[in-house]
Amino acid sequence: MPTYKAPVDDVQFLLNDVFHMERYGNLPGFSDVSPDTLAAILEEAAKLAEEVVQPLNRVGDIEGCKRHDDGSVTTPTGFKEGYRQYAEGGWMGISVPTEYGGQGLPGTLTVMINEILCGAGIAFSMYPGLTQGAIAAFLHHGTAEQKAFYLPKMTSGTWTGTMNLTEPHCGTDLGLCRTKAEKQADGSYKITGTKIFISAGEHDLAENIIHLVLARTEGAPAGIKGLSLFIVPKININKDGSLGTRNGVMCGSIEHKMGIHGNSTCVMNYDGATGFLIGEENRGINAMFTMMNEARLGVAVQGLAVSEVAYQNAVIYAKERLQGRSISGAKAPDKPADPIIVHPDVRRMLMSIKSLNEAARALVLWTALKADVAHRSDDQKARQAADDHMGLLTPVLKGVLTDNGLSNSVMAQQVFGGHGYIAEHGMEQFVRDARITMIYEGANGIQALDLVGRKLGRAGGRAITAFFGEVSAFVKEHSSDEAMKPYVAPLGEALATLQQATMWFAQNAMMKPDNAGAGSTDYMHLFGLVAMAYMWAQMAKAAQDKLKNGANGSEERMKAKLVTGKFFMERMLPESAAHLKRITTGADTMMALPAEAF
Image (cartoon, rainbow, N blue to C red):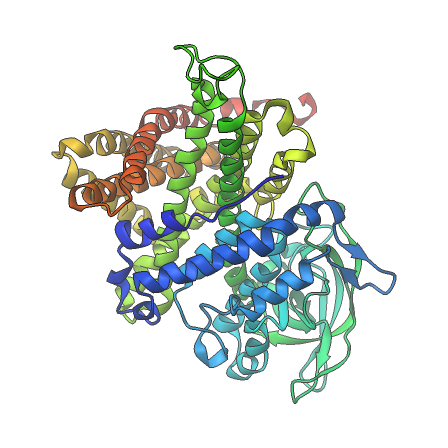
C-alpha cells in the first residue's frame, strides 16, 4: 500500500529562505504568520493529510461514489468523517476574511495546504477545493448581502460549492451554452438545462451545495457575451438562513471515469430551479473566470501533488527492492543483490521527478505570493505587476505541471517494474488520477493557446517583458559568483532561447496564426523549463547561503538541493533547445495533409 509524507521542510525552506515571507509583512494577514506559526500550521495540515485523508485514497478508488434512485449520492466509506475533521479544523476558511468566519491568513498558506491534501488524496481534496473557488467568486463578484448570507456557511464547510460550465454539446466553447434563465417577478430566475462533468455536484458531506451556474437570460446576446452567472442552491434557503424545500436541481447520473473515483463527477439537471444573479447580467463569464483561474492554479497543484506522492513511493521501493548488481561493483555485498536505487537509469528517473517537483513547488509558491500581493496590497503598481505575473504564469503552471504530473507518475510507476502495473502498490491509481488534470479546467492545448495568443501580447507585452527583465537581472547579478555559475550560466542560455522563440512568434504568427497554434505547446513547456530553472537558481543561492551561515541541522538537505538543481540544469533544461527547434519549423507540414488523409 502507498504512503505519503507532507513536504513540510521543503515548504518552510521556500517560504522562509528563498522567498523570505517576512518581506510581505505589510500585507494583511502576513504579520500573523511567523516561522514558528508557519511550522505549526504545516505540521497540523500534514497530520490531517497523512493520518486522515491518505488512508481514504485507496478506499475512494475502490468504492467510488454511488447514486441512488432519488438522485442523492453517497461518498465512499470514511469520506464524511474525514470531511468533518477538515471542516471542524477550520481549514476551508484559513484565508477567508475574518468577517465571514475565516482566519484571514495569506492565500499562499491555502495553496500549500491544498498541495498537502492533494498529495494524500486528489479525489477527497476536490470537495473543499471547489468550495474555495466558489468562495472566491462570491468575494470578488457578490453583493454585500450575498457575501453575508452565503460565505459564513461555506467558510465553515457547512455548505459546499461547485461551478457549472460544461454542457453535453460544448466544453471549451462556452458561447454555445443553452441553459436558460427566466426572470421572475420577485427578481429571482428559473434555471433550466443540463450540465455535465460537475465535480462534487452531489454528495453527502455537507447539508447544502451552492451551485454557481452559467446560463443565458431571455434576449441575451449570442456567444459568451450573453452568459450570466447564477447562484442555485441544492436546497432552497429561507430568509433567516434555515433550509427550506428541495430546489429543482438533481444529479441525473455519475460519470464513469478513468480515475478520481472518490469524487462524484455528476450530470446535473436543472428543471426550473430557483437561482439568483451574481455579478452583472451578461458578464457571467467574468465572474466564472475568477473561479476558473483559482481552479487552474488548484489543478496545477494537483499535478505537482500526484507527482510528489508517486515519487515518494518510488523512492521507498527503489531503496528496498533488490535486483541485480551495480555495474560499478556490488554496493551491498552482504545481500543477494543490490537495491535498484544504485542503478544509473533508476537514478535518472528519480532525479528527473525530484528536480521537477521541487522546482514546480517553488513556482507555485512564487505565484501564490503574487496572488496575495494582487489581492491584498494597497500599492496599485504592485498589484498590477502581480496580476500581470499571474496572468502570464497561470497557463504555464496548469499546463506544464499537469503534463509533468502524468509523465512523472508513469516514470515512478516504471521504477516498480511489473509491480507498478498491478493495483497492490497503488502506482496505477496515481497514473489514472493524474490523467484528468491535463484535461479539466481547460485542456492543456487551450492553456498553451491562451499563453501564446493572449498573454504574451497583453498590455503591449508588459508581463513577458517584466519576466525577462527579472530573470536577466538575476543572471547578471550572480554571473561572477563561481559557486552560482553552474546555475546561472545554463539559465542565461535557456532565457535567450525563450526570448528567441518569443521573437519568432512576433515575426511569424501575425500573418499566419497557425504558426502560433503549431508551436504553442512547445512554447509553454519551454517557458516552464526557464521558469523552473529560475526557481532552481534562487533555491541554489538560498542553499549556499544557509550552508555558509550555519544550516542548523539541514546541511544534508541543502547539499542535496545543490546537487538536484545542478541535475536539472544539466539534464532537464537542455530540452529547451528542442522546443525552440520545433517552434521554428512553423505550421506548414503540420497543416499540409487534408482531413481525409488522416
